[in-house]
Each structure stands twice: as C-alpha cells, then as structure tokens.
Image (cartoon, rainbow, N blue to C red; front, side, top):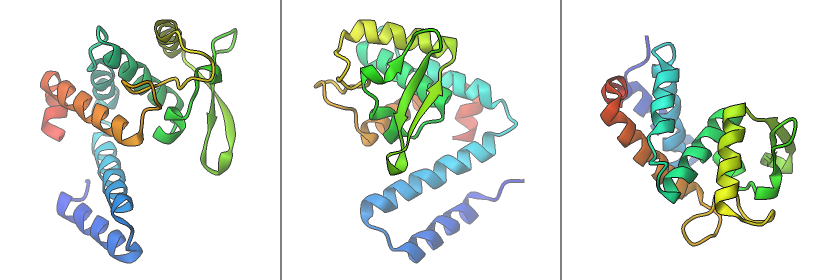
Length: 174
C-alpha cells in the first residue's frame, strides 16, 4: 500500500531541511516528489489509459496544442528529461529509415533515442507545419524562442486538468 500523503509531505520537508536549497530548487524538488508519488500511485491501475488521456488532451487544431501533443508524445516515447527535449533543434530529429532523435543530456552526454512510428509521424507533421530551419528549436514558444521548463510545466498542468474532465480515474487520483 502507498504511504499516505502526509508521510510524503514529511519526506519532502525532510529533504528540503537537509539540503536547504534555493527557492527554485525547492519548487523543482516538490514537483519531482509529487510526480514520483503520482506515478507510484497509478502503477498497475491503468497507467497507459491515463497517459493516453493526457497525451490526447491538448487541442491538435491549435498551433500550441499540436506542439504540446508532439512534445508530450516525444517525452513519453524517449523518456527524456524536459530540459533534454526542449533543447532539441529541428536538425536533431532524423526521420529516415531508422527514426531517432539526438538528445544532449546531463554532463553534455549525447545519445540517439529511437522513435516509435506514431511519434515519428507526429514529429514529421510538426516539422512540416513549423517550416523551421535545422538550427531552430523543435518546440518553440509563441515568440519563436525555445520553450522553457516552466512553460512545459504550465502546458502539462493544463493537459492534466483537461484530461481529468474526461477520465474519471484521473480525476479521483489527482
């Protein structure tokens, strides 16, 4: 059985007290702990259905909704960190015989991660829609600059809220 939320809150508080992080680190630590708790709670309870609901939540008819769907699909497919995904340029995506994306991770480590056919199709459509050069960010914000971690967090929160309206199990868990 999962620990209660109060135990989780104590764990987060203990980590915060031990590390004494800056405010931005504290905020990120809380988000990481909440995400881990939600994933642990959902394991074995239709996780795939919940993830699909979140992936389908952004409105694909809008530019930002299409971008969010592609971004969330790539994150789910590759297991990349948000910072790795938002650092990808159009030229880092290879959609030839073996579709993959080149990620630059922590410690400047480069890795090529294969893409599912569905994710490759979505990325292909997104790149055509953007019409950006190879050195342009794959996931720009509305001004054309690189999307930030905080921008992704806001968009994900919107998608979860939208998905919760249509997925009763998500509504009960969150």
